[in-house]
Image 1 (tube, rainbow, N blue to C red):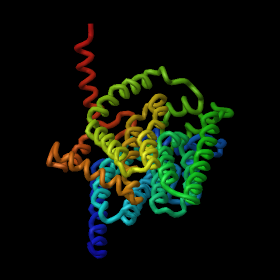
Image 2: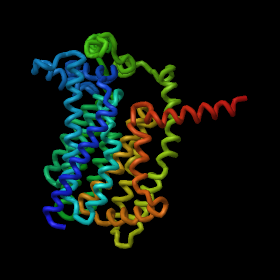
Image 3: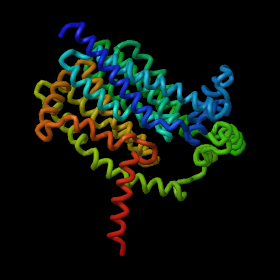
Image 4: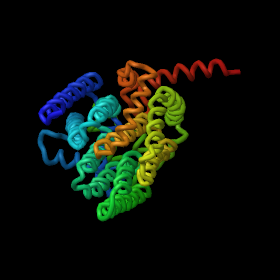
Length: 415
């Protein structure tokens, strides 16, 4: 295919995805921001180097610097909207960088994966529960790191970006850093000489910085916690939509240090998690089987080197890093999104970096999938029924189905 035809296809593909993004935005955006997310903007480093304080500190600086962004609900809304727009821009920059670096014979497979990722990524931070959440800002950091890794330039910036991610939310080490870490290991194992040393050092500094900050934030002690909580409460109320509400759960648990694990609301959320997760696994089982099939193909290829096999195994198992969040927190919707994003983004990055084995095995997998159903578009349409992912509930459809199933099950097994 000529260069002009390639450029034309690239231009037509990305605008089509942009139109799809706009449709998703219009469909799911509710022009509202949850009280929990506005409360997080009230945190700032004026109270010390506290956990999750970076975005609030930035918002505080913006409100003092720019007259049109005020310390009220619309200021919080517009601030979050600006970063949501940045998220979409970086998502498309990532897509374009991947398409530019991908070999021509693998471009079709790459486009399929980009479309599939978009089904999950486009609506994720436009819903009322996730608009302006801290994961939005972590997603921006992750996209910047992915762009650098595919671009193969300025990759040392991953270290300060990781530090920023930890300051935004130290859960970053379990939810987003795992993808950055496994891709650094992948590049390390598949390079020689000075390049291998470069990636080893980047990975080392990235881990040291992340673990050091995690230790600091996890063991952070609030001085005068009651006074700080009262001040944050006043600031948070001013940022809420009603002007009189705030994220009580966050202040009670994080600032005041109260144990809410046995509270009625937390027990209800844990019950929702236990119901939603098995339903999610069953409904997503076709994709889970396809993913394991692809990894088996990659590892069983006779041309695959030992270093490649090790790197594929590390990528396959790297998602276990999210297990502490599944045991200790309730935001299963966000965590399932991160798992989906993790595996799709890994394959996208492999193909973009010229890993022909991944593209060849992906072709073989698609051939086998066509034997199950010739209507391959079904594999793209099906996720629309299960998205967008939410916060505590994995998604509305998955949660509603889980409620029906477990309500009926409870009815039949009761004494």
